[in-house]
Image (cartoon, rainbow, N blue to C red; front, side):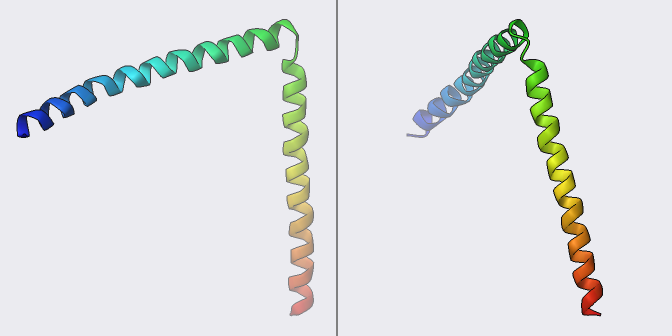
Length: 77
């Protein structure tokens, strides 16, 4: 029984890195295809612009929220 569990453990540990590397290759090929698609259609600028607008919106919202909280704290004292 112990030999069987050792063989199973060796088998699983030898297959685990293969599955991880195989998945990484598939993931990289998908991301490469997405990069080629975005580059050919010049969509990078759109993606970057949307991300910048979202991040700026979050920063502005945080600043406004901080100002409101500061006013509430000042009014409580």
